[in-house]
Each structure stands twice: as C-alpha cells, then as structure tokens.
Length: 45
View 1 (cartoon, rainbow, N blue to C red):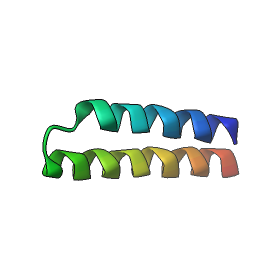
View 2 (view 1 turned 90 degrees about the vertical axis):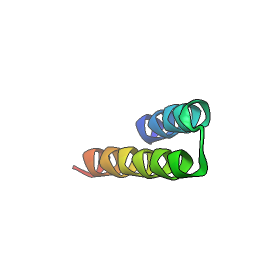
View 3 (view 1 turned 135 degrees about the horizontal axis):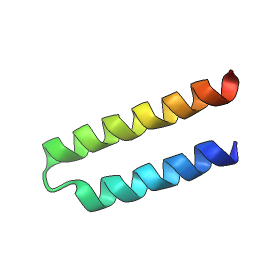
C-alpha cells in the first residue's frame, strides 16, 4: 500500500511539473493512472 502511495505522489508531482497545456495535462494524468494501475497489479500479485 505504501508503494502505491509513493508512486501516486511521484506521479502527481511529475504531472504538476510537466504539463504545459491542457492536452499535456491529459496525457500526464493518463500516464499517472497507468503507473498507479501497474503498481496495484504488482501489489496484487
């Protein structure tokens, strides 16, 4: 659970720092969601 939280926090920080446009924000949010989903799958297995 802690691993997922750390990954989510890192993804949120990157999303905030990296997005310059609305389109970029959507792509960053999608990448963050994929990272969280991957971490959840890893934790489940």
